[in-house]
Length: 202
Image 1: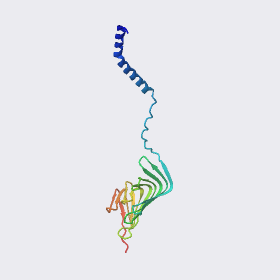
Image 2: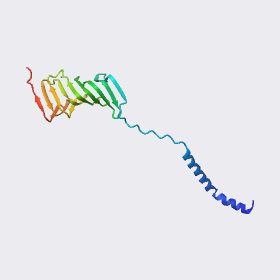
Image 3: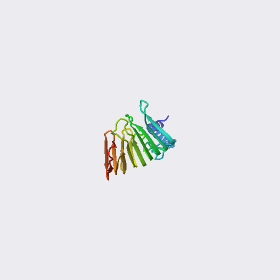
Image 4: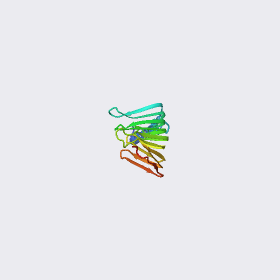
């Protein structure tokens, strides 16, 4: 090999690594551009405002750890909404029993219940009855009526921001709003409150 050719080869060999790096980068860019697109991760499903299941002519019962029946919910039709994990029930009928054995019954044209049935909103001709205590004469039957009643069966609380009629034994009251907490033995009636108190029977 001549001296001139040897020198030219030395000059080319100096730039050979750079040329190889450039070709490698170009090839990598081409592969990335032409490679099949990876499937995009599915976006988190947006909670639908539509029901995900229905029930007809149903009854759902809830038991405590000892097997005692705590509550039963019946209805003509129920729709479960996954967006907020609620159950909408048509023509609802509810029975609940406290730890002391006190029974509460409720009914309405429509109801909204949370997932475990501990909070229920009653709409349209709502009616809640707390049966008289079998041991305490001072606790007669208690009834609530209105177009809306908010019920917590296990804690025996009832609330309404709409007009309500309350019957306690022979006594009757009406009010614009009402809140009742049985555990605290507190009844709050607000707005236009009217009452009729009957003399005790002898």
